[in-house]
Image (cartoon, rainbow, N blue to C red; front, side):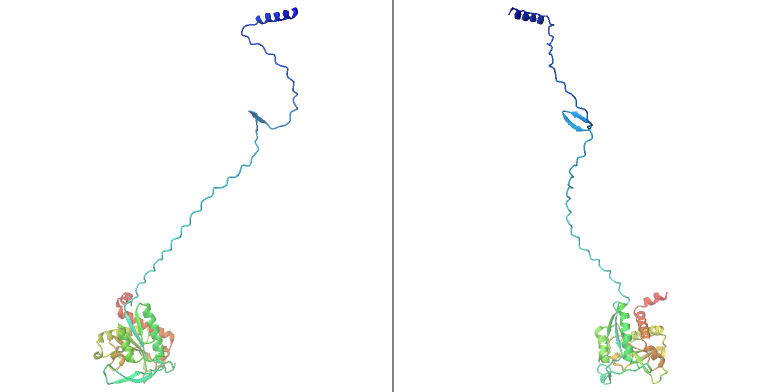
Length: 311
């Protein structure tokens, strides 16, 4: 016991001999040695806050972003196309002119009488038979209608209004009735288309017939139109004229005397002459006949065009 107390006192004495304020030394507990495992090849790592991050991070598949749906634009209805107005065609040179065409004779022969003029006692056949080609055998009414239809088309193309007494052969219309058609239409000029026959087969040439002065109020107008048209017709066809200046005057034709408008008859040639028969019965020459008549009509109603063409 005495020995224990001696040890305690010694310890206390040693403690009092230490420097004041010095912290007591703590003897660390012995640690167990850890044997390091052999190093293996590992990827270089960065250590931070105990999180291991590969220096060469593996590529990670990121989810593909879905494309933002675009809103389809609303369909705007296409506007209705604006109709482009067709240009107004310029009027033809004969616009406003009314031409009457009477192809002479017809398939039906009608010898019944009719007065040659309103109230007249003198009569003539309603429709005579006409003549026939001396060699061709072509009837006059065929030539007259063929030329009339061709002339009609030319006149219409030039803007004229055309009134035809008939467009087929199988009709029965008297000369007085044909003249009255011209009256009703108020034609600016009526043209009666005929071919002539002669007792002498040597007779040739085209000529005009107009009403005598006492049978019409349009005498001067008729004569001027007849001369103008005949000249153009002969220029185009090459035919000669018969009679003095190619003019004759009649007072006994119903087609004249019943007509209250300007009117004339053209005898386009002689079917009793072999040479002219060959021409008048030819479709190609009939086209020239129609063209010559058209040229004359145009020259008569539009002399300004004829003058401009000659300049």
